[in-house]
Length: 449
Image (cartoon, rainbow, N blue to C red; front, side):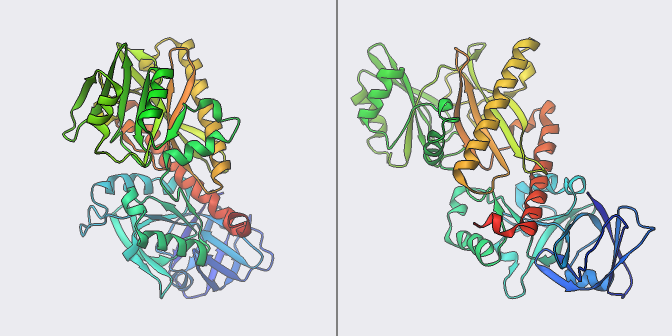
């Protein structure tokens, strides 16, 4: 249940609570990592409102009045939660403190009123280790405002790319916050394609959705894949945005390689033998961080193949739900359906105008994405609040999973009919943070054992 927290200009060391909150000897109030002793008074005139006097608010470093949740432990009333969103790429601009991603974070933080709690964005240089506080960016009616607050109850990892994610400084910060301060992080790392494949391959419920995949491709494995499937994809295990992908096809006695060059142009080269293809395309390329994956003959519309981006999120009860489905149609002869490779986004209704067919496809995608989400969480044994799946349906209506993304892109939400799902996925990310906050307060040992 949400309550409206109001800060009262008084020095009474008191928090006034509505009568539906029944205390049993609590003498402490907490906000994030900060706590203080104070008096609690039950007020019959308060209805879903909590009033905190200014002196207590200052000690707890509560920045302003807001809609919040309240959690009770044996001796403490926890207000909040305080949700930190960890990222990088800050600028000196007060209007765009996170550069071009400021708009994304503004939309995300704008959902906190629906969810309840305090959410803020921060970077490594905003942490004051000696004081146990963070000077974070809050998004308010007046735009971006900085406030110094305690360490948060939970952290949503939104570091922007793998290079920064793997930087020793950021790795150390995450480990310190998690292990020394006991703060749970969710979506802690980018997924590695090969590691995800190996984990899902172990689970009987997810295994049927996986294309045959092998690590560190050689000409021998490429030959085996092409003889068996007629086509194969070479992908960087840590790649994103469809970059560095090669599509190999065996056409009668010839071999074709499709790729997108450094200038962003879709290219195709044909060779008389696989050996000549391999020598010309891959002899100077390190493939020790690549995977090779079975090619799938995807469904097509107007001669163009398409696949699906399916977002799943955990909600305020910690339960997986499908939050968005969209189709991505590839540019002709493009290696992938990625938008930056010339792909376009369509709604399911635009692809499948027949209601019966559409409902069947939606149900299949829905059930598959939820199954994969549960299997992945079970195998990873870590806190995950959001996953973006790239799913395909072949010409025999079988579903395949090509990729799982722990920090899915937002390109599909540029479609005017999908904008509301952009808000939904943002809202659910904060809702899961509230769920995780309650869990760490109620059962701290459950998240770190």
